[in-house]
Length: 129
Image 1 (cartoon, rainbow, N blue to C red):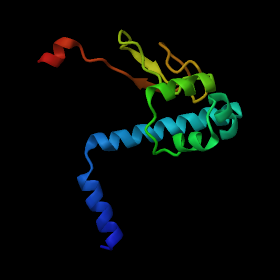
Image 2 (image 1 turned 90 degrees about the vertical axis):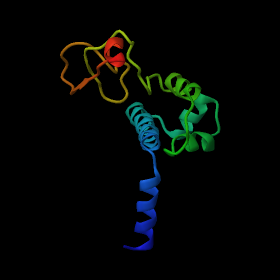
Image 3 (image 1 turned 180 degrees about the vertical axis):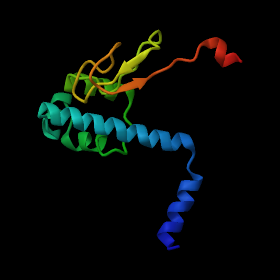
Image 4 (image 1 turned 45 degrees about the horizontal axis):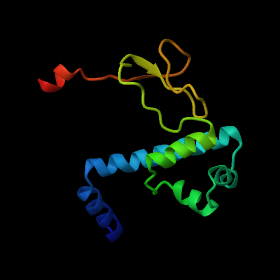
């Protein structure tokens, strides 16, 4: 095994599951923002203007490595006119249908022509067991 492969293997072995999940979430959010931008015909410069930020700062936000705060995600929601991250209300525990990037209806009850995503809440009684 080469030195780079060994270093990669060591890094992967020392990475905790929550760090991997964090990296996946950062990249998924960035990918979603780019999807909305593409669908709406918004480039990075225009997004920066809508946010009242320098383009270099928005570039850092979108490089997939930046830790976006909830405040900045809210700012992106407003600037893009679409939800970047959607958290279904706690009382919704049926099957929801996640729609394409760039839509405001990110989850809906009932049959749609999109692929279903099963979201389940664990009842409090089951957590205690």
